[in-house]
Image 1 (tube, rainbow, N blue to C red):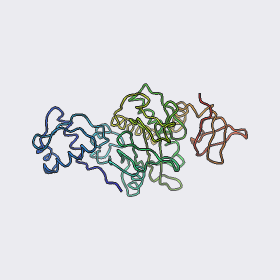
Image 2 (image 1 turned 90 degrees about the vertical axis):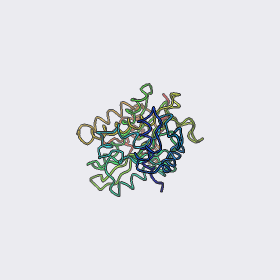
Image 3 (image 1 turned 180 degrees about the horizontal axis):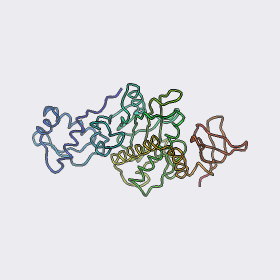
Image 4 (image 1 turned 180 degrees about the vertical axis):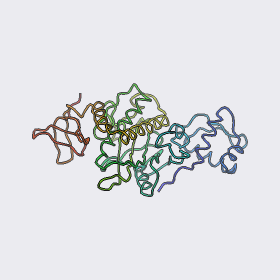
Length: 338
């Protein structure tokens, strides 16, 4: 198991950001974070290993040359105040950062079983075993994407999990619209987001539930942000915000926007009885493929037909030669290319 990033790294980054115009002595940093000057030097070296551009050395002090785009708790906590992800005293403690991890979803599920509070966030710079739906993997290149899992404990029946997955897709859509409004994001049922027909985001929801209520839910979101190349098997089907725009994006900014959007969707579902119907309507409106598109579905023996929207539980309806069928799960392939 990979261990969480040393929390002192984030505190050093914050300190250097707060004193961006001056050189901060090793002695001052040591006092502020409660350690020795030699330990500060070791931690600075660790930050450099993470790609943070820190000038200076023990004799002269240290200065940040550029604001790092690392998803450290101290970089995100201020933006999350008032959300379920920043509600605990000392919100940064709810945000768990890993330089490398097998899978943020696996870690979040393990923590949830052990009683981790609702609103806990798990972020990784790199995943060695990123997971998609079914047996799929999620390619997680270092410090180029957002690999994020959150723990929620909603008072809802397990049958609402699909609607929750659709709401998570809408949350990603809103977050991308906030930082890159020029992009036209398309939602593909049940849990993919596309740009120009290629996938840049996947959502994986896992839960622990009794027959009538959810004990905990883990929402995993993988977003390709600054990737410029992909493994051979993904080249035809994957993209990233950077590939689509030619611009590098701030992962910190997008991650903060994502968590705020997830909080809005979550509160809506928990507090508003009409939210479920609204989610279905909004998903249909934001998806080019859930109505009037010719598709084939791989699972359940396979079927083909034309999509006819979502039913009240969020399942996809497809008009086949044999009549109307409801797709509970499966990979949807769009046959016509509009």
